[in-house]
Length: 438
Image (cartoon, rainbow, N blue to C red; front, top):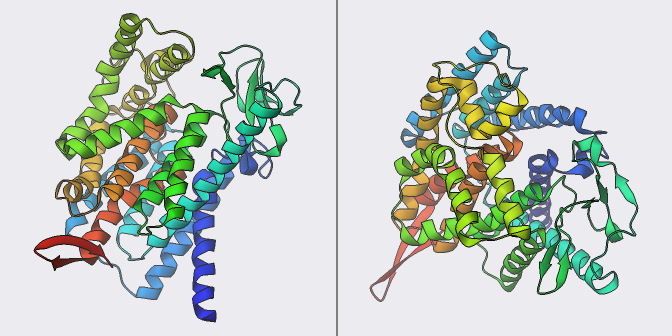
């Protein structure tokens, strides 16, 4: 019994460390109050890389060997090529260590693929923690609506918005100490059936960040093997919290993920291609047409135009083989181009092609197991939400190919389908087959 309790404590500790690391870049409790501001966030990345490296080396020494699965051989080769390209880019252009950071994260991915570790328990813990955070968000909104009628003007500023490059006139308040809300002297309120909703951000810098984190924890609870009433309530709490955060991108990710699971038509080749073609040539035009045809205004139009400006006006300004230094374009052209286009402009056509192959081999096992119906719809939906969260937030909005947040998502997308395939047992009962995950 003591050993069992000790094992659960160890698992909980590992899950909490993972949560802190993958959320720290977006968590002001860490970056502002612990590290002392935006200028020191890079320290967390260095600590994360060191801890992950030590953990992987511990697994290597424990197992005594490294091996490569046949199914992951091409992914490892492409990952090594992409890492080499990033190192070359850093050496030639001097990318302020951005390209070198990407190469290091790719090395961590490669090393992770060569060791075995069952981390299935992490999903359950992350899912329940996300449900607890969602409960706090809902409680804060309930108190604001019932006590203050949605008015946050009486609360004192706890963090100056300028410290985190927010727009002039925008600062952070902490109603009831349950999380931050950004208060601006301008801006559109969210009104739902006459109730004024202040967009919750928990302890992140903006709604996109907390919604991206909750999407990961929601996917985790969907992936977890547990079947209980607590899991059901955790899912409901996540959905309610996402409504109070009012992130159109997160709601769109949920609908798209469910749609892709239900139709089971799109595959890894088409998905990998759409990732680059759709936001550059289709989405900006689609957003503009949607706003004109529907005549929407207010908050929805504001969110639509915000997403459109993040993605860019469409097209590519420059095409070259090797690209240029990271951030070499001036601010106006960067804003017009969009974040994804900036990445393409930075690493050129060669970088684009190598990254396309990397993405294709990365998601191929996931699409294979989803389309073969070897897993339930809950796990399939969780995997698809993780993939779309990485694409929409990391690539489109954050413009960061590899980071702490993305590493967990990518490793889950790669390793979980392999784990399920290797540990599934087909059991026949009354001529009906179903899958049991050991």
